[in-house]
Length: 213
Image (cartoon, rainbow, N blue to C red; front, side, top):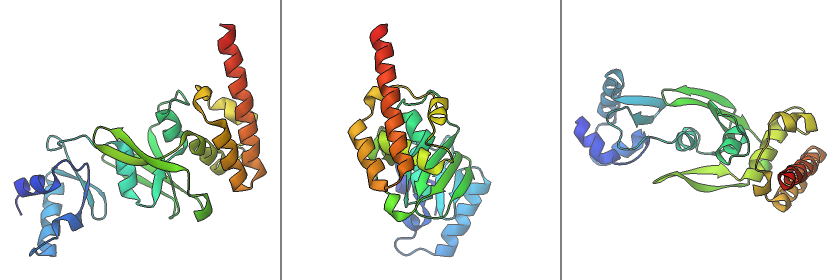
């Protein structure tokens, strides 16, 4: 296989799996050897076993970090600080893309960035949707309410008012308080009900501050 053929097969895909190249009459071992050569030549980035991305200047599109996170672990969605920053609920720039998964927890260091996966049990794996995070690129992302609850759920002491204030939460008027309370009740954990109550109080305080301006 020539590199030009690879570029045609991949087209605008931000990342691709080896299986995409194994259709038809091809020698799998030959394909894998060629991929290894292109990695050594700096034309491809290896992301995990069997998953690659084109290196500049061969990329037709710049892979969005959230799309790469989804590809690294198929049973996952972006959440926690990464989702909160995406929605403008916290002011911080988050250097590591954080996701929730039902699979084992893992930290992946790649040429395209760092990706952390936090484990949750299957009943708590909900509250996400498909979002166009960049033109032509979609990723599974927690809703704002679920991202906040995921963070509190996984962080020791995440239900304390002090911790929530440390996050410097902002734009709380954009949250669906009813959805937040419903998800907290669904979990059946007093910890998350406390989070919903604290967030409601913080939202009221922010609204009063805006009215006073």
